Amino acid sequence: MVEKKEYKLNRLETTKLIGPMVDKHWAELREAKEHGEKVAWCSGPLFIFPYAMGMKCHFMAGYAAYCAGRKAGDQVLEAAEADGELMDTCSYHRLHTGMAAAILRGRPVRKEVILPIPDLLITGRLCTEMAHYAEALYRRLKIPVVAVDIPPPRRKEDLPRLERFVVRQIKESLIPALEKVCGKEFDEEEMRRILRVLKKATTLRNQCWEFFKLKPTPWTLWDYGVSIAPVFYMMGKPETVPYYEKLLAELKERAAKKIPAILPDGEKYRLYWDAWLPWAFLGMFIRKFVSYGAVPICGRYPWEFFPHPEYIDPDADDIVKNWVELYYTKGHQAMVMMTEGALEQIMELVEEYSIDGLVMFASKTCRAWVGQREIVNEIERRLGVPGVIIEADMVDSRMVSEAQIETRLQALFETIDARRRR
Image (cartoon, rainbow, N blue to C red; front, side, top):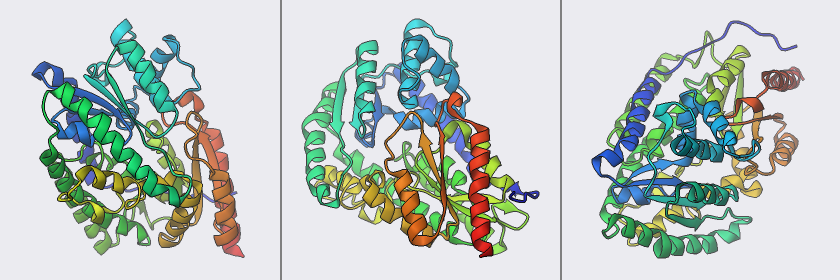
């Protein structure tokens, strides 16, 4: 049995700024139609294009995090199932059809999580579920839809070909659709302005990542998880750079004073976290970790968002091509969901961040993160770092078992302790 003692989480003060920023973002979206503004809903990494056109934009995963964070997830999922959705379908998908049911049929959900019907639905198809998502909302809301396929690579050799394929779709389908809805030409200069802000924010963000390497760490992956919004779906907004400046300043102060993320003495176990963050259960998971003196430090999904800001080129001759390069051949974001690329990346993270164990989050309603068992086995074989798989969901509480989480974490920490004794 793993010994427990009194550990306490030491949250960063800067992260308290996120709640008001996120609330402001979604309030502006809800009120957009009242001000005569155009609205887009978007899945996949394409929302910079409606932003460049001055549209207010919803982002699929961002909405899921917001909805779950406002404790409305189960309520909206129930509305979806009452409207005919199956429980086993993607919980992000069901959140949207549930919200549509609330709009069209008055299903009871919290008012602040209802969004305005969009003028355009943009689906960046990273997985097959996104095609069903677009079709379901099209049938319910009768809105125009434009689809851009963004296939994950199977081999590194696929990257240049896939990049060309996505660039053509954006130029030949997405941009003309935006111009038609907005009644004006695509605003390339606004896209360049957004990229300048994004480059500053992600450069600061990467400097913050360096503090995860310290022992003890001054912050946790969960602190970073709530800090994703300013660099991702709020990109280009004036608050993004000042937020990361404040975050970096607080981390520097903690490092200088040797203030750890877990009191009193810092972490006992440093963990890698794989795949989606469990947005509705962040608090529950971190309490479980902290009770053992464990800290999630890094992971594939949070590291996905523009990991190489040096390749963001706001002055590129072909700004669309530069954006797609950030996903494929330069930024290598697309590689994180591919077993071959993931294994290499995770091994680098394990060594660079002094990881003691792996926690692989396997969503019961999303199977996009393939090969987790193979990755655990291979990293244990090569590096001697053990791992466990926890099956749950990002939003749906019916698919989360605290007993399973507790049992598997205990097994992981017992294995780490046994190896340390040897």
